[in-house]
Image 1 (cartoon, rainbow, N blue to C red):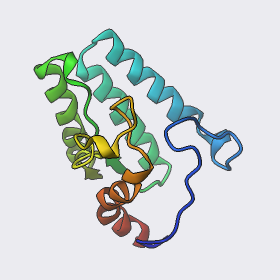
Image 2: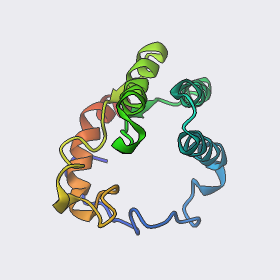
Image 3: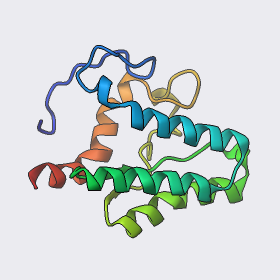
Amino acid sequence: MRKGAKLQQYFAGTHLNPNVTWWEKSAPFFAYINRCQSLLQQGLPVADVSSNLESLVRLGKDAGAKILLIGMRIPPNYGPAYTTSFHDMYGVVAARERVALVPFFLDGIALDEGLMQDDGLHPNSEAQPKLLDQVWPRLLPLLKK
């Protein structure tokens, strides 16, 4: 894959397609996502989420994967201390595990209503090139290794 390559978008942001080749191997990833979502919804300490994230990164590294950790933010209704701790968690895990990091995937996108779906949380199709621009500089070196 190269920057600027034409990519097809399959229902981005609406559902996951079980007909793709990686689906059968994705159970651990979805278990992690479900666990983190549950922890966040319960308002549990970020340390619990961080521990799960570190475990996932270690599992990937142990399996020989090249890891690019992509940071996210949570809505401000969780309160400033929690949202800041959540965002900072990605940098801490990336440094501790020595993996590449995109600090905030939606940087320059999240606050642009024209690039977000009606829910205000998920990027729309027009945001996709900007998302690639966020990730590509940190992904390309991993692909060359």
